[in-house]
Amino acid sequence: MNLNGVQMLEFPQHGDERGHLVVVEGMKDIPFEIKRMFYIYGSDANVVRGRHANRKSEFVMINVAGQSKVRVDDGRGNEAVFSINRPHTGLYLPKMIWKDMYDFSADSVLLVLSNEAYDPDEYIRDYDAFVKEVNADA
Ligand code: TYD
Image 1 (cartoon, rainbow, N blue to C red):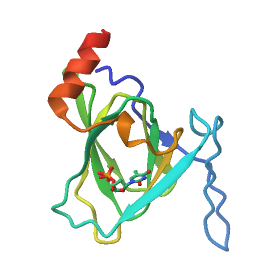
Image 2 (image 1 turned 60 degrees about the vertical axis):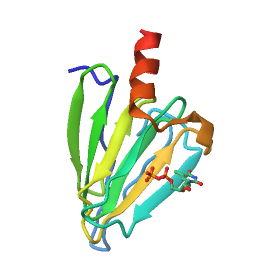
Image 3 (image 1 turned 30 degrees about the vertical axis):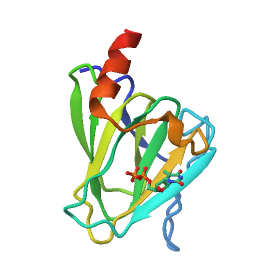
Image 4 (image 1 turned 90 degrees about the horizontal axis):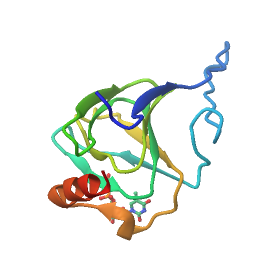
């Protein structure tokens, strides 16, 4: 399986009797400088979010509370499903990966870090167009 570097990352935890503190530093714990963060919560279990790929944005997805699943697809026939369910782990997605987020628990808070500011024009929202673009690059 080659999904262009899609992988689970583990972040340093600083737990003591006061509780837990998890650190995510750009270019240290994740392979980019952080330019944007957003978070998703209140999504029902039957909702599917995402359904897009990005020409420029890379992401790290962290379920800081609860859990969800992410299906990734590189447009070249490789697919994988990741469960994100621990506040000190994150799923790294390079650019040009199709993703669906689903199976959100009621308490899911999905935090997403990115290397790019939001630009709707770098989102590919049509799956067939994504596959075509990936394979044109090959
Ligand atoms: P959308 O891309 O549909 O969310 P998801 O990736 O979970 O499927 O985004 C939902 C709305 O939020 C849409 O109107 C665009 C807006 N949005 C921003 O303004 N900035 C952002 O960084 C993101 C990710 C979304």
